Length: 358
Image (tube, rainbow, N blue to C red; front, side, top):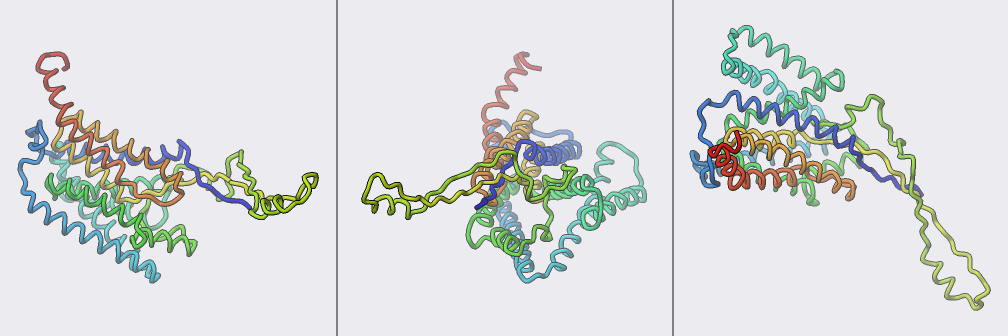
């Protein structure tokens, strides 16, 4: 009996960490360029969110969560009903709205912030080239690297859109709410994402319509399920009847025949599939930190997101099931964010004032 066990190497982890890091860096740089030049850096926790109403932020977060729950549930229902064209049309509409419509306004504002003279027709032409190639790469045929590049750009533009329209308190409340929803949707028996994974596994459909980042895009040779590690583990199991035969033997010189069953555990190099929502909310947290915090806090949030994602992978390898990728990274990043405001930022400011650090 052969049992397959998926394992994840360091190379597989790096194939996911690289695009996540690039997406977060892209969002942080764009936020830093487009924000106003004069910003007030808060020094304490209660000063982090000093300009927005928490009640209004709660209402916006509630509407955002309702929209997210409805779209996720409708997507699962459409998949279970085999309405693949409806899911594909929705995904294409989102891609066009972000890569063509919002990209035009964002890059036009970015050119103005960098004092780059650019006319509206030139902006329309360049955006059409960029967005048109992106839509074709995502939904038709393109090189794997180009396809994954536009996946990262799609997530980055979504995070920039949310950062531009959501205040600070709303971003943090949304991050907490999304993390809780991610746990409920993936781990609970009635969670929509768990139902989606189970339905796809039952149908044997590994390419269901969704926007996912696959770590195998960096591998030049296609991976097959028969690709195993050089050493397999053989486990010997004794059946329950063997003990009974041993007890029932009258003579100690008689050696009973003990039936044995050998089970081979075959280790297969697994691939990691990360949803675009994970990219979005990693970048959303880092972009929010870049808007309101100094460089030390931004670096702490950046590294903590990567550390949290690294911690999630061994848990996936041990459980051999799909797990939410948001709770660990966002929890660690939130701890680093607020602890940096309490301890690290005042310490570096004091060192700068006393000319210890420059």
